[in-house]
Length: 473
Image (cartoon, rainbow, N blue to C red; front, side):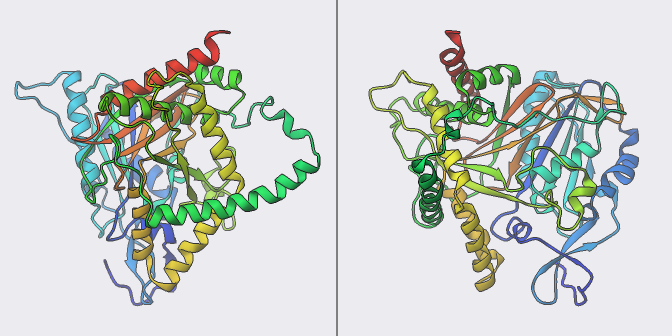
């Protein structure tokens, strides 16, 4: 990494940005845009220079070492040709079919995800796949280093490049995140018990959550299961996706009086136990398995403009503003191989996540990382975060997307999904809503997790929960 003597006027890299670009791990976000028509690449250079690069100075900057050891963002000239790639897929017989291209695309995503970014140029790449797949006529992959920002920032940047397909002059809108008005009506009763519990319980939860977070990041590991091998090495992965209708999810939400996030988290938890049973019929379904659920600490209801994001002291500040919630995956009793109560996975997910959100455990954990960085260095914190991920069984992240179909340079976008690369867990699940659908991407370690079997388990888990929640009505 380049060493700079004069860094007075350079923007410092955020602590999280330093953790995610360290010797321990290099984390990136891969966003896949599927187009309805073949890609015309004649506009590529102009769109990058006129639309993408002006979004944020970090897209034209490299990470350098400051004179006092802290990292800084240094503005550089961008050679677009070094960042844009045009892979071609060919079968041994010549031209390949869309189904063959599906396999080639999966392999290509795994390949580029494992390749580190050159540190001498800005930390982003664009890969244009012009071969048709079973899902799209062309696919565009944005590979962005996580040091540039989190999902909220990077999706906000991506959306600023897109327009509504039906009418570019209209603004993009997002699903409402308001909880159902029927949720927790009993909470309006303010008695003595309510006052005591609202003051005392968060304190107890804070201490418990913080201590448990420290233990999970140091000495307490999840059990080895069909979704956690405990390997110390980064291994290749495959990505499979599945699509759910938001309307059907909202039906479950209304029937159970929970939130959309509660529903999809419950589906993932049930699917995980189903997969364990199917991948290893004799496996123990009462293992200690933990999901790290990412929480956006901005506490916003929609995306703000890029101008708002980069403004000083903005509530929607650009960068990495998230925390991990340690959520145990509900256990299944030995005699309940038929999963007699699927809805418990939704209710348990809601109960635990709601409690953890109300505590200040994530705040104390953030303070601990700050102290660790000051007393030691960013590499030590990166090791701590990596160990947190490695000691858990899976990671779940959820990003809210637009309600309307979008287009890029007059290319209608059929589908959108993303995944995260460079983290050590064997199973990572990312969720993105777009145009009335919820796209779930399953990043699974090759040779250990059967991603196709896991996606089928997701489908079955959703059907089981939908039937029990809404079938009788």
